[in-house]
Image (cartoon, rainbow, N blue to C red; front, side, top):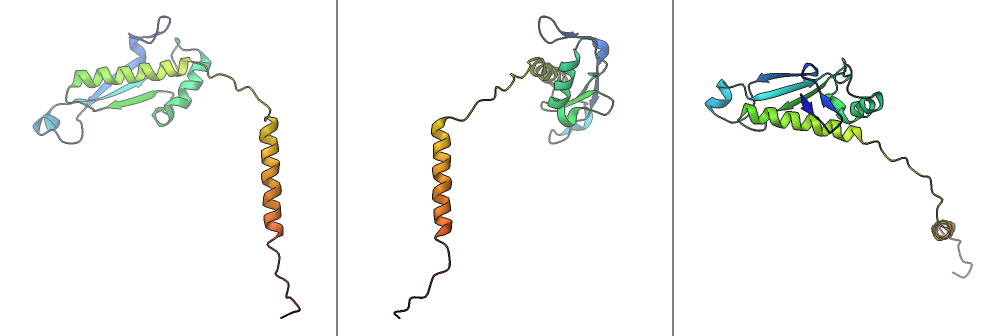
Length: 142
C-alpha cells in the first residue's frame, strides 16, 4: 500500500513493478543484476482517486500516461534495486500529490489606467514614426 496523504492511499493491486537490467556504465553489475524499475499504476481504474484528480493526473503525467489509463514510471538512477524502487514510488506519490491540489481559478482583472495610457502613447509614437517614413520629396532648389 502506497500512502499519498492522510486521506488517500493506493492499494497494492493498483501498482505493479517490473525489474529490468539498467542501461549505462556499471560494469558486471549492470550486465547481471536487474536494477532498473518500471512502476505501473492503474490510475484510470483506481477507486481511490476522484474523477477531477484523474483528469489533472492525466495532464501532469504527459507521455507517462498509457492508452489503457496507466501511469508508467521508469527509474534506473542508482545501482540498487531497492533504492530505485523507493525512488519510483516516491515519484508516483509526488505526481499524485500535485494532482490533488486544484488550480486556483484565474480572476479577470482590468488593465490599470496608467497602463492603458502608456499603451496608447506608445501606439501614437509608433504611428508618427511610420508616418515620417514616407517618400522623400525632391527640393526645387537644387
